[in-house]
Amino acid sequence: MELPEIRLEHVTVRYEHRDVLSEVTLNLNERRIGIIGANGAGKSTLSRLLNGLVLPTYGEVNIGGLSTGKHAKQIRRDVGFVFQNPANQIIMPIVADDVAFGLKNLGLGRDERELRVLSTLAELNISHLAERESHTLSGGEQQMVALAAVIAMQPRTIVFDEPTTMLDLRNRLAFQREVAKLGQRAIVVTHDLEILEDFDRVLVVTDGRIAYDGTPDAAVAHYRQWSHA
Image 1 (spheres, rainbow, N blue to C red):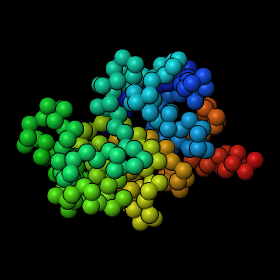
Image 2 (cartoon, rainbow, N blue to C red; image 1 turned 135 degrees about the vertical axis):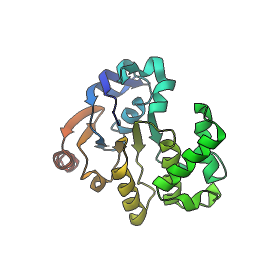
Image 3 (tube, rainbow, N blue to C red; image 1 turned 90 degrees about the vertical axis):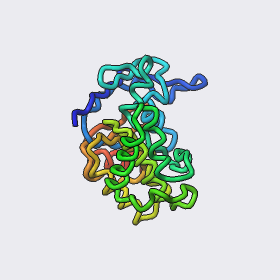
Image 4 (spheres, helix red, strand yellow; image 1 turned 90 degrees about the horizontal axis):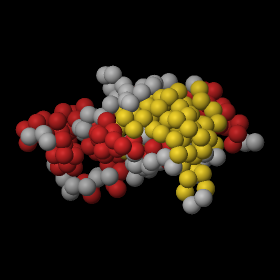
């Protein structure tokens, strides 16, 4: 799978006279990228820039040559987003219907939608949940269903905002295994530093700026040193 370059050029995001992100310039090409930092550092804002959920106050975000300011709808088909609380992302009362929901907007016929849903659930080893009522799912099951709904749309990049916050250890490890298997690029905002061990690159966000950009070991060491300073 060819992955589109993500480029941020001199990006500043300002809310109520305060810069949440300031002068961020990045090229993101790797398959597995982590984003870490303290609460309020700007991590979630950075992640939301990547599919147009947040637009820059100044600067520009380009995904595969397309600007989020001009092509947000097209970009959201190529950059999926999994939110911290999956219950907020699950819309339909039955799991299979929820995974199929976004596919209608792609103009797929019923048979193709059903095939896409079944293959996606099988890929994530949750075929047994297809006919379950969404409100009966555990936190770990909800997270996998939310991921399935995104994967079914076949984006080339998936952004995760604190995906393991609500998961116990068993479900966290299961989620980590599924992310490792993804053919898509995964960009993961997290406080769970252990899931970043095999990543290609980790960014440390501090006070709205990229304070460190490097390998997982070095980035985590920098973040821990800063946290204890």
